[in-house]
Length: 313
Image (cartoon, rainbow, N blue to C red):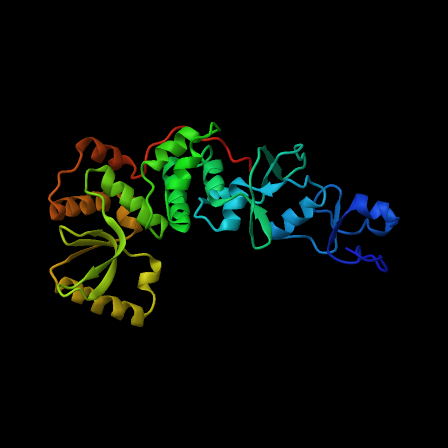
């Protein structure tokens, strides 16, 4: 693609609206070779990131437009499923709909926040907007992360008072959302454990020795039974130094009478390992498992949920 020369400022770099160039008497023939990321927009360099593509779209969109839904979730860095990681831009506007390929427009009033210079819906609004298109499990995972960042479940609880698509699923998700988990698999495992009748653990809390000295921090802690559940993600298997440090810390905790129960994602997703893990925890915690729920999770570990609406990708 040839690049036009001698364009006047500010049309000699970046992206601009064609209508603005026309108003400045820029010959249309001089910009035809530029990239056109959106109808009515020309760019010297095709935008690639979400921020760049939104900035280009904003040149021809309403001023009230903000990134929302899956697009906002990606900008916020929320743990959404892969189905949300697409190139379609989701925007919410109080003005007219934007009818362009690659854009899904949602109507509504939103108070935006700015993340890396991009106006997006707030964390809580983004979570609620995702409710129609995320399964209950994934909605709880995202909700846990939002609650961790805002340090409370209360803003999520206040948000579900609205009448909007997906609010019933959001209200159901609230039953399971807690402050404290730090990863999607910690959330999924915690929900699985409590569903089958195990007591709810404390999340990422310190463990002390009998004199009050700090020993470690446990992912899922049943303090009364002196049981600590540790999710072992991929990073736990990288590097000798970190592994050796974990072993030393673990021995100190076990010397105080605690029992460690390690588990990985395969203990969650693989049925035989899932059932063995639940059986061991039930024995250590002195609880009987809910037989009906055990039958449910024998087929799949996640929370059951209703039909989903497509995200529009």
